[in-house]
Image (tube, helix red, strand yellow):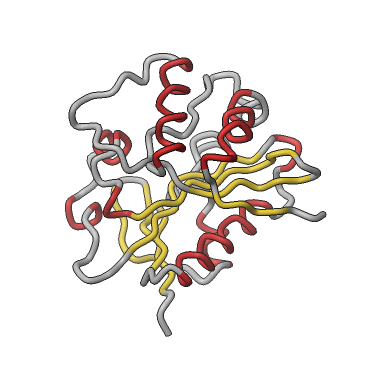
Length: 198
């Protein structure tokens, strides 16, 4: 299966929106088009309205066009089949998900002098799950992060499997197979890191 991974840019906005409006959560009746807007470089301390899919869509358009939401789209046969949200950690510390989860300060703040790329979310189209697409997305995140001068890639998988919808961080095993090690933990989550410096 030939998967093409593309970095999210404004020219892919329509593909991004269409994916979240069709396949991203087609197997989860409780999910109402998140557009992945809760993990981004916007400052949500002032309050943002996430109350409807329409409002989240407006934010998604703004975030993609401004580069506040970053990540990668996986394409198969010209169609988006997967998404990975990956952004500079220090730019995202005031997004709604950091604030909502009340992450401990020592985990939330980046280590001084260490440039961290954070992986926040994977979303794979239902018919394409268990085909290695998330692993390919993670590999591309790490490759580009190394090329862009990051020191580590960090992610926040649940300690125990909850269900396929609550585990959008990806399973711990995908990170272990990609060379990540457990760095810290809080609540029900691990903080895993992969060093990009030799």
